[in-house]
Image (tube, rainbow, N blue to C red; front, side, top):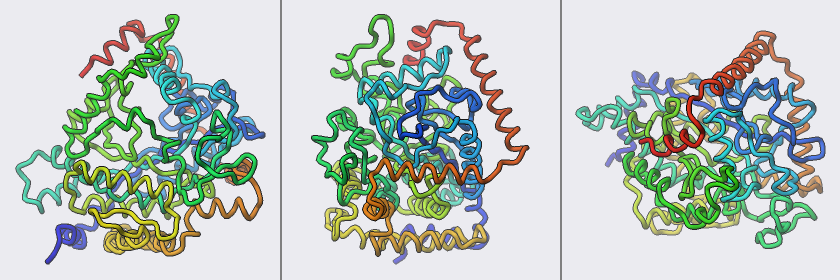
Length: 525
């Protein structure tokens, strides 16, 4: 008896529908710290040659002034996306005055909160809001957590894809926007069910410097590799563990992914719900804002999810408002570590696999996630993060124990037809090849990035910071060896100058005080 997944596969196995999958779009956001030659965070302001981080479309900052974020435009071909990302690295590498771009997800040597400069965005109301939000993150979670870097993979399926599925399901009477949003939430629920696989395959942060912890890691539960390096023997990603993007306050949130309305309502509620610990911090001190509000979340972005439904919002519009009014436009995968062995933090082969994985999540049937399964999904992810390489490690699948590697291989077998369809649609062999590469990692744990990182540390007899410095220098040299064209350099210079003019315009056009601006923003629906 054919399953819904097999029936949906047949839609796209038809040669007439191959071209639909050419319309898959990608964008990549890569975070990386600017560091000095002695492996410390840069204390310099955002380089003038890179324009203004508030208004530059491609080069901005995340939490810290030292934490760069590269944002590519949207491309249909993965190679084009990565090519643009490489050009951003090359151009930036030329304009950071001998500093380096840190190769890893976990930070270099930290020297207390004072050494982690919060990002500055100028004097406009929107710029001040971004900085105050980061002040709030400091007071709520501490600064070290905010220096952790990752890669966000933005993915969207073409309208023709959703139209075919809508026709197949006999739901032509439903508004296309509503069907598409429901489809993306179906994808997200399956992503949550299977994201443990991504942590096994791509987790690349099993180690961290002692300086990350205020007490030197004394109570972290980690083991010592050397005098500065701490590690968890079978971990794949400390970044996605309790010591990374996780916190106790958010564990009380029940963000629901079963429908768009459920998601928006539960997120909006968190932004409006007072939280005693944050009320104790206070909103202001001596007239200076300490945070945007004293609620569970300051704004939507504070919710640390592994994947987000997204829509590009208009200026001044809240993300949840844009989602409610116009539906989901794409998804943002947020759980990917920086692969320190890759100059861009992500290989083209791995990106091709992400496409296979996300199309699989979109075609598989996807029931609502209720309380029991929610706990199972959460525990599977945590197990893969902290013990993913432990021999024989087991997960739970619909209440039954299953060996991680066995389940992973079964999923890859199920994904094989998708890889073949994507190769046919793109006249390539990269998608099937990407699947083969991931299959080898499941058969041989030593091929995973987390295992390779630990193996390299042991082979070289070096610590985490020393190895990351070596890789950072290697990547910097590779960026320097490939010259950008004069045309591309001129383009980036023009974009930087335009970002400066745009920020100045925002600052001169503000008509109300920041207090009033913030009040109106928080009250807006």
